[in-house]
Image 1 (cartoon, rainbow, N blue to C red):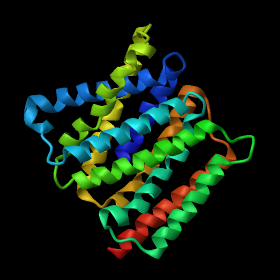
Image 2: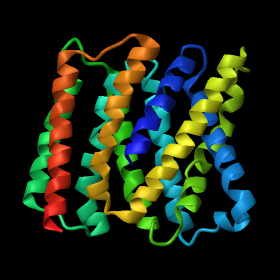
Image 3: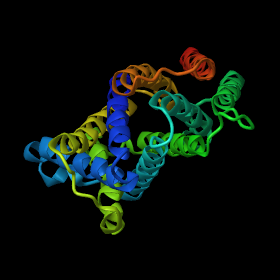
Image 4: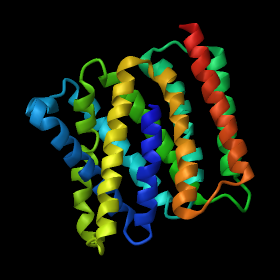
Length: 275
């Protein structure tokens, strides 16, 4: 999960660069399609078409739909807000996982866990700053992305006992790779330069490897324990945002992110202690 948290900022950074000249719908499609091609080249020669066989195809399609929703919302928002702010709001995803782990996964949840989730959402409000001049509607798109990604992780945990990580990783981009083809003719713009083409390819490749590691992590531990390790993503996003865009987060972003990270780490610790 830590490795995934370091790969996803690279994907988001590439998507933000592409969003300056290309539609976020095209970027989302390319991210999903390259993801599918990359993992197919990696797994199919060794495992054959059998790796695509799922015991829970409905759950897998639901996972793919949630991932597509998350990517669409994130890539659209990134055309308006900085990478670090996007990553900080995205930190709400582990809180969504914790909130759903008990009713959906029947994983034990305590009063301390619910308290940590409540405090974490206070951090989200600090980040969003509703009512202030800093508040932007794209921030709500990132929040939608966080909710969709939280549900995606819950569904990943549900299919983990039934399908191997390679199967889950290959199913993840299916809705985005083929569903977005319906709108692609209306937004398509051929990559103008070789660097643009490499950005499209890199966006999909980093996303593919990252989501394989997420699926792998969910095999070995309950979702509400492993999810807080996504906080490595904030660190990576700050570095990538500075290297690519010379942007550093403001004080309120750091405060809100610190509240969310602290609540998430306490959440993971309390669940571990209970187990």
